[in-house]
Length: 311
Image (tube, rainbow, N blue to C red; front, side):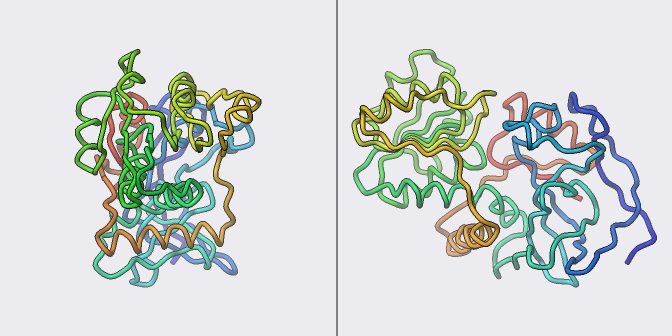
């Protein structure tokens, strides 16, 4: 295939969601060691909204313009259903090229949408659960508990036998967290939300950062674990390492994993889902040409679970 054109969503200038423009581009042609994917679904992450706005969590993450965003897609390679990372760009398009080693076959019986919803969030949640290793009887706080990663962490912590406290914003998201197995839910749009947390906490999964993370850190007992993996508030958790050491709290910032580990972690999440022990929440889907609307909805905190583009 090649020589034709594909529809893709291009970012020519950092800024608001409207800067994501649907256009036609030359059909991508795979080079040595690469394969062509016919994209059916593209995964949208919160980080991609930050990249589009020109506010990456870390400056080196800023893409060179023009760029087609999208780090995860689901589709077909020679008729086989696969999910795959793209290497950081190229996902918001009808076809994309990826390294031959990147695609993961979709397990039998698992819907393609569920599989792509687990590609990035599933590996992140699995890595976090392995690192925290919650035990039966421990109390675990999950921030952003109705988000893509948070909704999976609620289930994985519950499966490990922990008491799960879900922190989210608004009744719709709190109801979802309870449906997924949270024992307690607290609304952190309420300034006194921490008063509703049964403490002290053994584990905090921090995907929000900012004041929410600081309050959660204060709820940890001596010897607790705090794992920070996101900054939905716009800033990472400003935690005093000296205080953490004094209180015997283990701090983990980010989840650095190799490409080989990334695939293994994604496959582990797919296996749990195929066995019925893990359910990705796909809260909303948008057609490719409405990528800007999808980004705006994520930024307004209107979304729950995963947001996907249908191609």
